[in-house]
Image 1 (cartoon, rainbow, N blue to C red):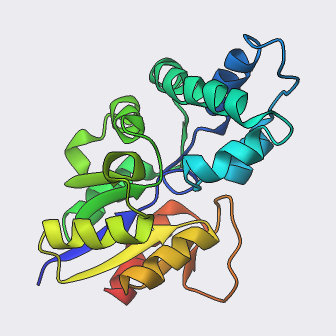
Image 2: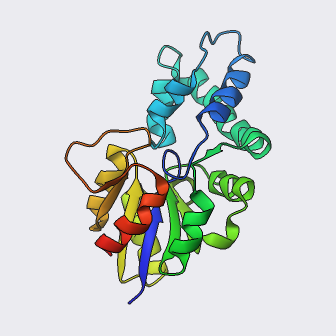
Amino acid sequence: MKKAIIFDLDGTLWDSSESVCGSWNEVFRRYPEIDRVLTPADVRGFMGKTLEQIFPIALPDTPDELRRRALRECVGYELDYIARHGGKLYPKLRETLELLRKEYTLIIVSNCQVGYIECFLDFAGMHDLFDDHESAGGTGLSKGENIRLVIRRNSIDRAVYVGDTQGDLDSADFAGIPFIRAAYGFGQMNRAVPEIRSFEELLEKAAEIL
């Protein structure tokens, strides 16, 4: 039986909110019409959402055409910025993933743009630890649909999704697989679910569920 752990990225494997915040604020300063300075807390508040959901949250008082132009520039520049500055990897990440890889197929599914997961893998030096990854930017599909897609693509028999937001839980429900909450991440849940309070706890929790 082929078992997999499928991961959300932001708030689950790393925290890139400071880099995202820095890159977007640099772009905002290029537009005299935009009077907005994001904080890392602002960024953590929209992590996990699709770009279409983020746009009105990030610039709520900006005309739609200007908002879309500026934020699409943000998305492009963000990848260059993160490639240079990276994010904060959660403690015991590599050690735990190396142990998990002995038992499970490891996959990342995120609502990010194309190239963002690759930035994480490059910065963390973890291309060797993950078997597959998929993004909303790559397929145009929802996170739940992408979870189903990677399960089919990798011929997975049993899987669990690990994430930190309500959207992650909803996506796991949509895909019909169990969920583990990364309680150290950014979000809250509308019901009690299995959870981990540090990444290394996933070794025991995944074994219980899978």
